[in-house]
Amino acid sequence: MSEPFGTRLAAAMAAHGPLVVGVDPHPGLLAAWGLPDTAAGLDSFAATCVAAFAGEVAAIKPQAAFFERHGAAGFAVLERHVAQARDAGLLVVLDAKRGDIGTTVAAYADAYLAPGAPLAVDALTASPYLGVGSLDPLVDAARASGAGLFVLARTSNAEGAGVQDARTPDGATVAQGVLAAVGALNRADGPGGPGGGIGALGSFGAVVGLGGGAAAPSAQALLDVGGPLLVPGLGAQGGSVADVAALAGPAARQVLAAASRSVLAAGPDPAALGAAARALAGELAAALGY
Image (tube, rainbow, N blue to C red):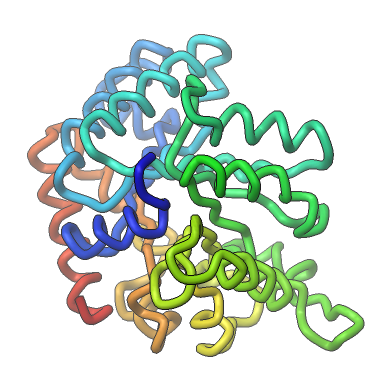
């Protein structure tokens, strides 16, 4: 990768709008598209998404679990899907929420962020709830390869509040601590550094969902991240474009909003899928000041 993820993502959002489409081939959606719930159906679904969204959106976000449920054949489809999407010019954010400690998280780094790895992606979602420092191997690998991370801070599920709103000894919530830690990673890179640094979009981002049970972060906390804010919960999960804009506030140009079912429902025709994504990306761009 010749440029840091933050730089590449900012350019893609400026060109196509701040939308990432989730590639979530769950059984019901495969059936709605007239596809079998098999690796072959999965392959057809993924290929259609690449054809539909290349040149229309900033990025796609395949959900690893829907590929993994098909075993080794599903992993093979995911590998092809990632390669096809990147060859088509799409940025790929793999939604795998990886997180562990020591050599295990280092192995995840090798799998998803090492240059030349069969499953190498542009960015990976990661869980910090074994401690933000447990993600250091992923951070190091992202810096070395020019990739990005999206670290879970405030999720869109109600169950997350019990952890994310818990107070640390300094009085901040756990979610606030995660946001601050991600911001520190971007600031550490400095201007022109591997993470994008000050005055640019950093390569280390945070997941900040709509709805859910946890308290919404302050505008300053979001601005201080200095990197992209992946915002799930739009569309089928009940969130609106206006909700995205309200959450973002002055951090609007950092937002990458995620939608899946609300766009994928337009399938399986690639032209209809592309049109649905283009329309939603345009709404987001207008609401967020692009």
